[in-house]
Each structure stands twice: as structure tokens, then as C-alpha cells.
Image (tube, rainbow, N blue to C red; front, side, top):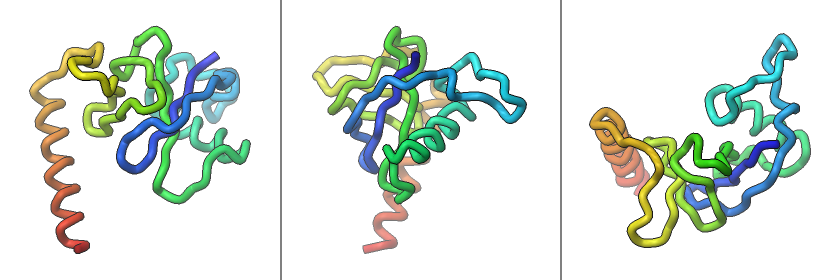
Length: 125
């Protein structure tokens, strides 16, 4: 059993579902043991698309979330946020901290992505 969060384009979790992780296998048919990493999210997206639970429109994406907080900071709930640069979910309540150690490299990558997105938005005005 695995848990999947549907994230909108602003990074807000809009749904969380239970999925059968036996459906996520590599090209050789071997079950991928560590969900929550590439290529598992890609397989999750394909699986949800095959079930009609996702539309390939670029405005939403599926991401695995850990009920035991083993990856991506915390278990995603509806209304939580997903930081694509840090690859973590965060509780929207004040003072909530993701259950990860944030490195300087992660912060630099997040800042770079935010600047790039801001530039893209300004160019499209």
C-alpha cells in the first residue's frame, strides 16, 4: 500500500489517495521497492492516467507521500503545500517544519527555481 497526493500548479495538495504499490514495476517487471523517488512518481502518474484519475494538462501532478514521514518531509494532507525545489510537503499550520534536514545546496536550488519562475512570470505579462 502507498499514498499518493495530487498537487495543483501552485503546489497545494488537493487530494490524497491510497494506491496499490504492486502496480509500480520497472521495465523488467520487478517491483520497485523504494516509492517516493524517480521513476516511481513517473510510474504513479502513468498509473493514475490509466485509471482516469488524472488529465495530462500540466496543471496538476501526482506525488508519492509517506504516511510514516520517511520521505518528502511529512505525510501530505489536503491543503498542505508541496515545494518542488526541496521535494517536500509542508503542513500549512504555522510553525510546522518538514521532517528533513535542509542543506545549503537545497536552499540554493530552491532560490534559483523561484527566481527562474519569477522571471518566466514577468516575461509572460
